[in-house]
Amino acid sequence: MPKEYVRQIEGAYRIGDTRVSLDSLVYLFREGMSAESMVESYPALTLEQVHGALAFYLRHRKEVDAYLAEGERTAALLHEQSRQENAELIAKLRRARDASHIPG
Image (tube, rainbow, N blue to C red):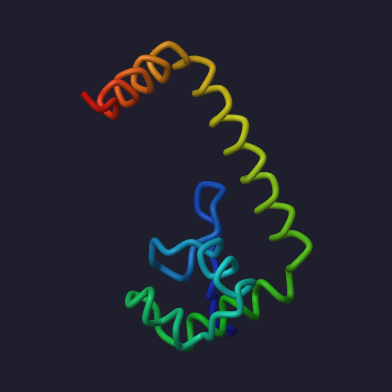
């Protein structure tokens, strides 16, 4: 029976039984980081788990890339919504910041 290196839990891809997301490794992989460096960045993972997760990504690349793109779109929408809902607070904080930088 093959090992399951990536599991989908509550809509998110996780590495094995850890809380490390597949997203984290995919972004590092895209930046050219080695599997060994990923293990250094995520000590909860073994080298085998990293290689297994990357193999899963490469085998399901279309599906995972679509999942990541959807997450990025959702994050951008939430960011914009937050900016609109908190526009008054943001403006107030900017005024306070700008006032503190005025030489006096």
